[in-house]
Image 1 (cartoon, rainbow, N blue to C red):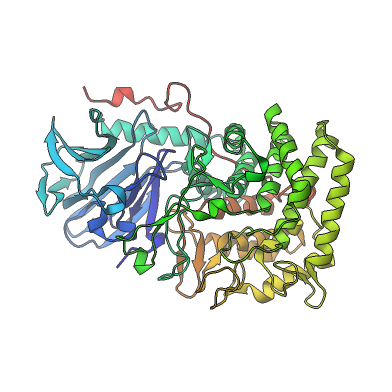
Image 2 (image 1 turned 60 degrees about the horizontal axis):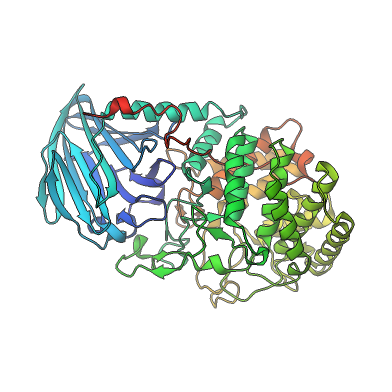
Amino acid sequence: MSARIEDYAIIGDTHTAALVGRDGSIDWLCVPRFDSGACFAALLGGPENGRWLIAPAGPVKAVRRRYLPDTLVLETEFDTDGGTVRVLDCMPPREEYPEVIRLVQGVRGRVEMRMHLVVRFDYGSTVPWVRSLDGSLCAVAGPDALSLWSHVDTRGEDMTTVAEFSVAEGQEVPFELAWYPSHLESPRPLAARFVVEDTARFWRDWSARCTYDGPWREAVMRSLITLKALTFAPTGGIVAAATTSLPETLGGMRNWDYRYCWLRDATFTLMSLMGAGYHDEAVAWRDWLLRAVAGDAAKIQIMYGAAGERRLDEREVEWLSGYEGSRPVRVGNAAAGQYQLDVYGEVMDALHQTRAVGIAGEEAAWDLQLELMEFLESGWKEPDEGIWEVRGPRRHFTHSKVMAWVAVDRAVQGVERFALTGPVDRWRALRQQIHDEVCEKGWNADKATFTQYYGSDQVDASLLMIPLVGFLPANDDRVAGTVAAVERDLLHDGFVLRYLTSDDGAVDGLTGREGSFLACSFWLADNYVLAGRAEEARRLFERLVSLSNDVGLLAEEYDPVAGRQVGNTPQAFSHVSLVNTARNLSSEAGPAQHRHQGPLAVPGRLVGRIPRSGRFPGASRLAGRRP
């Protein structure tokens, strides 16, 4: 049986991330980047596809987990008949190569422990050549190598590495695993205790910059740290999640690779972090954006690789059985080639918001916006695949047209508020033209709601963005009607579906149902705030926060039928939405002040760039190196 998605915690070094289960097993790790091949892929198969287990050898009576406060250092305690043992897991800020530190500490009594290391490169398919070298164990295959360093004796067993050891109260047993290019020498081992302390200090220093001080601070801070962990620090790009192919329905086929940078997700992340005081991260993301989309505005992609790569070819990993049998397992994402009109609005709005919060302008940013506007003057009329990346036919999605309006509106505001130069009279006319068309063709008078696409009688949760981006005020009858339709048709078991799927795949080209998309439920709470329904907003928000696992993480969706998180994890969109809704509920002035300037709570972005030295501030780890 696979562990539940909510049984996993994340550790990371803002280049890549690992998932650590409650049972002490690291079941997912891609090295050296988020989108590299996995050396531990048990998450999508079984232990034979790669994992690293450190846990009591005998029965476990209880497990407790937490992150050290305001850090990404994970602490897991196991109670056994013989005593209690603690495992501290972290990935230190990177000096050169990714490293995983696991520090086993005796808390009470004496506990017999077992270590089981199964290295399988290339998503669980490649068994490495393993040998002892200079006191460490080295696993090599093709371009990849891992070195394991520990005090304990290890032995080979069925093409894996195992060890048994015991730890008594007050004792510590360190383990270090480091990836490096196989043609180079392995890195020297670290002094684990000092590295854990340095890593915790780095995260505490970063967390101390947060300006949010309202209710739900613990949940907000955990979300911000998670968003930071999904940053690719060398470039400022932000991945949507740390995993691929965790299913939207258990056993289903809606399994996608989210280890890439969506312009849409990154923009919302940018605004949530700006709202929490992380302006340096906004600059890093803006610079990544300008590099990634450089070129023909007509060929802007909806997503890119962490360094701005454009080719994200999708393929199926046939040897993996999938999470709880959910196949296919996909690597790459064919949606990169889709036309999604809404991303133009989100990019324009993000660049607008950076100016609105006082971030110094970049001439190239406005040049890019002028290019986008030149394309949109005709491109907004075309059908697209929409925000949900449907693999069915292109349509005139209402949300897409609304976001085209946002793009033009922010261009107009660029001239009016920031004295930028552009054909503002033509843009004002275009803005009105788009607005009029949406209100005519996207509105269904019989249903008293805006609809998913022109001519449809179905609603879509993305319509909840209409008042949040300032297209119409919250007190407009058409907005109230749309919110009521979403409540009637998409609010199931207290959570919001993205849209209604169909067994024949007519809506999105796929069969089967999906869980409730958590971001959409947060959007409904935001609409409640705007409409003055504060108590309903608070109840919904607190219910959503309660879905977080024991260490505060959210996946993409929640399946109320199975009572479980589903989809890729941890999901940036879910955590961004939590931060924004918390800020909206916490604001004494209320979110209405943002109505005509952008999304409800000025949404935010992740960590800044690494200094030229290649090391993070506060990561004084050379002293921790062993000679």
